Length: 331
Image (cartoon, rainbow, N blue to C red; front, side, top):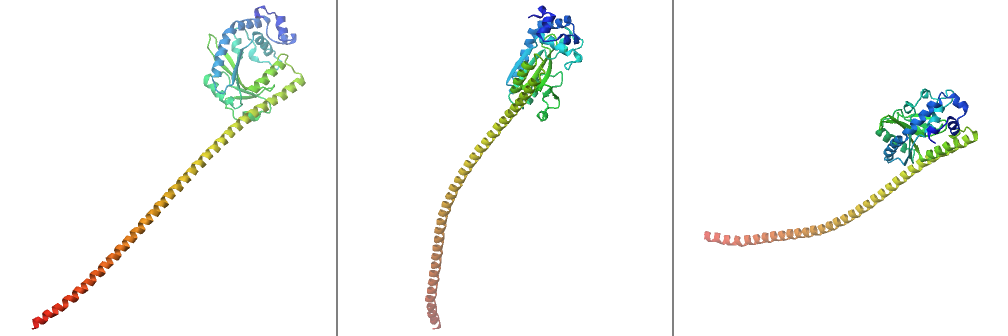
């Protein structure tokens, strides 16, 4: 139904707002309806901005999928009623004095984008990606369930940690852009697929009636813990797969090294055999040379001996002849 045709009673009935809650709010129907009409007229332009954000976020390799929406005009009006009840737990002072001219400066989730990822540690990589694309208007907030204290031990310092009373887990950002004539705020939520599933179920069960039924809340809390365990299991199996791959790589590397070393040993054996053969051949040559040298030495000695014998023989022959000559001289 168009906001232009919406009556006050229809609005209160459609959004389960009691007369007591309505009276407690500081809003008037004319102001609230004017905000709804303005937002309804801007919905198409806001959709274009939402699509632009979603397209850029989807380019991040750590993002599994992206969902987005522009806030429904009646949901916006209902939110304003809740935020303007001074003594309620949902009251926020900044909503006092809200009107059709300034509501888009006060409400920061007119556009909502959800970046979903598989593993919890992907959230930090997505954080770095988002910060590289836009400047946030408010410090990012990491909502956790009470008891999740160790989950955010490694978060960057610029992220504030808050315990969500309903147990929601997700990173929240508010970015401002001027893609159109007026500055537009976009809320980006980053959470795992498991967290998104629980949030959607909790939203369907609790949000329409703001149910405080003890049994339902208790069951949703147990369900929330199971979701946290599922995320932990997802992180564990991811790490297990990484370690298994590393072990396999180490094993293959070790096998390759062993095979290489075996080949090196075989090469060394062949080289040793070749050297042994060469050494054996060298020994034969040396032995032959030794025999040759010995033979030469023997021949030399025999020659020397022969020459010495010949010299003696020559001396013996000459001496008598000299004697005979002397005798001749004497005569």
